[in-house]
Image (cartoon, rainbow, N blue to C red; front, side):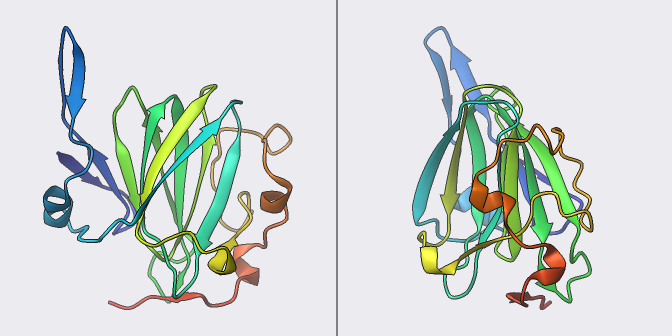
Length: 187
């Protein structure tokens, strides 16, 4: 498995090997041993699967706060997304910065987003299916988010704000500057 670091330490891209023949293909998309060797030695406790029918659907930016923080391993089983991780760890040298990658079924890649980051994505193809593992269970009482297009962050989304398809809840999320100090960076 090939591992590529992004511009923010801890946010990593994974490229699993894919073996194909006349029957189709086989791929080991997750191996605890391989991920631990790449510095991601975590236990994933839940798998999630989301379908977004329309291009330009934005989900996020989401995260869970202590004691139910989540790291996420995100891949696409059909279609493609523009995937974003924003560092929200106060005191971090990369606080308020974002890393993004195109994650797609065709590229067969994945992104790991550690706890302490807000995460979101925008669909680039119709009927896109996103599958992701998380390191803690969904806990609605600890669910939080921040505004997807906060101008202070400056994410270069592949969709205009007027054309983005979002839930009402995601449109009303606060800006980074208005978030309490949920996460603190430590070396």
